[in-house]
Length: 310
Ligand SMILES: C[S@@+](CC[C@H](N)C(=O)[O-])C[C@H]1O[C@@H](n2cnc3c(N)ncnc32)[C@H](O)[C@@H]1O
Image 1: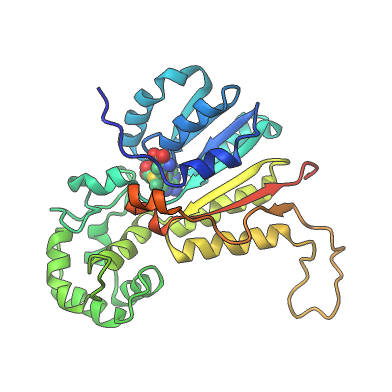
Image 2: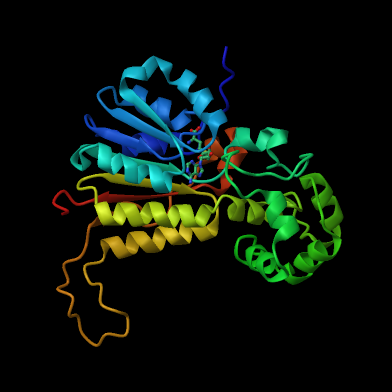
């Protein structure tokens, strides 16, 4: 029997946004352990779901979990940046009515110590796809001082990123997340709510899995394809990701694409693809926060494409 991990984040809000879709295809770009996927399939009985994940463990788990809906599910392994392009070649774009991405690492990936995502892991891996070429060990032990500084600043927003990067370079190699975290304890910010190594681990993970690049590429593909009438829901856990989504949605909404410094509009003022459905991001309500502490940093933004996009 499968042990089903706890409920996915913002599940009620995800179901609500897709609730009026009664035919066609919804793409779940981050199937994980099939939480959102199974709920969408249950709530939308005439919808077909294409679910993507790059993690073989998630694929194996969810293939079994979604077995009940097998006739309406297609599961694809790979990074969503490339799989979504394949889907566009294979399916009629007009059938795609919804796209969901719940970006980031799953709680089961975090809990599997041998994956190296947790501070107490005995290894340094952090690859969501175990076959991917770049692991956390390569980042920590092979990146130059400047490269380490960049990721600690940009992705970890660590104030003393220079000290941390130079400590790593002077004391490496490191072979486990635990060893790295213990060695750097004295340089880590002390917060009440988060483990001292959280930001460091997050920065390395984002680099290993090219998480921001993946998100940008997904948004690029959606922008090119325009998906007439489709609803787009993106859940992120990091302010950088949320900013990327927010800015892109504003660009999609705006009619005018003239540069900011233009004195007057010359673009035709007719470039909007649709409307933003969330002025502010949706966040977890109190009862969800109590049930699932991981939801505390989740932010969901929604966009609805116009029906007549070409
Ligand atoms: C936060 S979890 C999703 C949980 C899922 N919504 C559920 O209900 O179980 C994110 C999942 O997306 C996958 N993932 C993250 N980035 C990906 C990418 N660029 N391409 C494919 N899968 C990705 C991870 O492997 C992980 O399983």
